[in-house]
Length: 180
Ligand SMILES: Cc1cc2nc3c(=O)[nH]c(=O)nc-3n(C[C@H](O)[C@H](O)[C@H](O)COP(=O)(O)O)c2cc1C
View 1 (tube, rainbow, N blue to C red):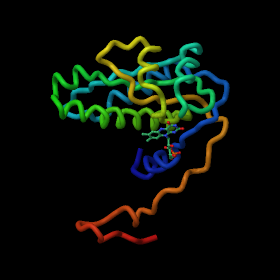
View 2: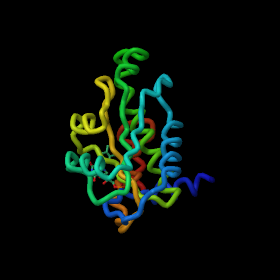
View 3: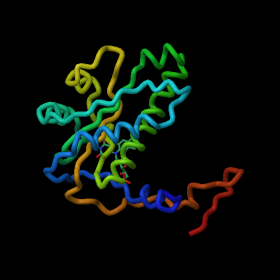
């Protein structure tokens, strides 16, 4: 895939909040997790776990504690952090790196899903404590991010982006591109 098609893929990913009533195969979900595990990881600690949710009852329970989860996605992937491992191997810095690691893994999942014709939404608005309990996570593991997955019923228009020239400066603060 060339740079241009990568950019097209990146631009075509949308946060989808309306899904078709159609299941995603476990094979496809496993491929998304494979993409996640190839994300960069600070000190290569990889302090992550990925919970695939394909049980409707569990999905519904999670939904009840997730004000930011919209629509009826077929599946969820719950991205979890192993804080014990992160701190043991990386100390305070290791703990800080976890969130970056999870964010990069999340983007890998969402882009791989987009490339496979699947729709996703990244969700932070949920009760970690409730989700940890629903998934029976041990004390040292915590859910941090949820990604809803399914087939899009409706793909929204791309939300406005800030102009590149507004957000890019060259060498010195103030020397903004300011083009376009
Ligand atoms: C860290 C993070 C948390 C988010 N949390 C939620 C959420 O709880 N619920 C939701 O519907 N969307 C959530 N989103 C999706 C954003 O609203 C969305 O990415 C943004 O509006 C831009 O739209 P786009 O993803 O289609 O480009 C989140 C995105 C990020 C990166």
